[in-house]
Amino acid sequence: MDYKDTEAAISTVTYNRNEIEAPTQNIYEAISIIAKRADQINADLKKELVDKLDEFATYNDSLEEVFENKEQIEVSKFYERLPKPTAIAVSEWLNGKVYFRNPETE
Image: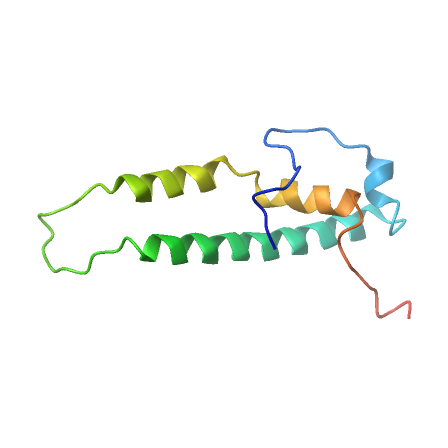
């Protein structure tokens, strides 16, 4: 999934509790689902970042030489500016993009 084009908030936002709990009718269940989705998003972003940073990795045994790679710094800064995984998960939840099911009620 492409998290770079998300409309999630970059800073702190206050949400209407009724909107968050509306799909499940239980605020605790909704928060649990959002938290699990945020964990998935975080894992995806971390894997993507590590893959991109591995392109710049140099494998030598010399501890004396440390190089600053401008492209590596730009990639890191880009990922730091992205919205946090929880903000992306809440945005997806409120827009109805998160699939969930409860096996106990089925």
